[in-house]
Length: 238
Image 1 (cartoon, rainbow, N blue to C red):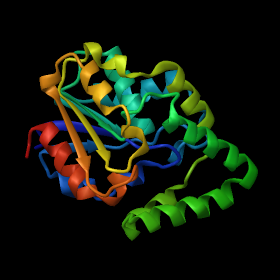
Image 2: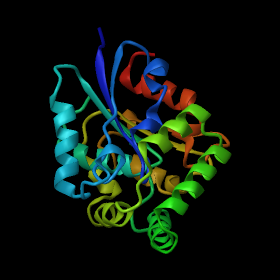
Image 3: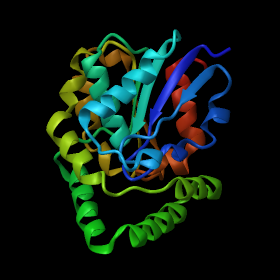
């Protein structure tokens, strides 16, 4: 029987298949829940709204009697932090994976650029480009195949990051009472304000900062074993 539920939210343009293999890496003591976000994956035809996204997360958190650890990568990490800010005592842990850059800065600007490129190139060509890039970075073939089969999504980039820029910042961690993991790749563009995020937390002693060497922003895909080990530690089942 599991001891804790871990909810992981995927990144922009991706889908829940980015967590393929994590259940085995995390082990039987962790119940893993990996929903597709609105406008992504099997929900790609649903509009991305703040209300629908927070409702999806809330349903996953509320649907168990187990302690809940919430985490996410990139877009998913910012959404996890926002949920934690709205429910500061509800979680047993919070994992921000590649989500410690203040929205509105250089990191989120890259996603505005992606949105413009998508409008110019179209989803079919963008899918080929993203699939090629993720494989070249070192995403395992089975994971890359699963991501492609479930479907990349591009229409949600603009509404999602507009809302993240409007609603999210490091200050959201000020009242969160649970332990926090700030994990990023060495070359991750969204780790630039890690110190600020750590300092903003209610208790710095409950913040763990991890940098995965020689890894990019795609580290949960390319370095799944190391990422899962840090998640196990946060879930206190290592």
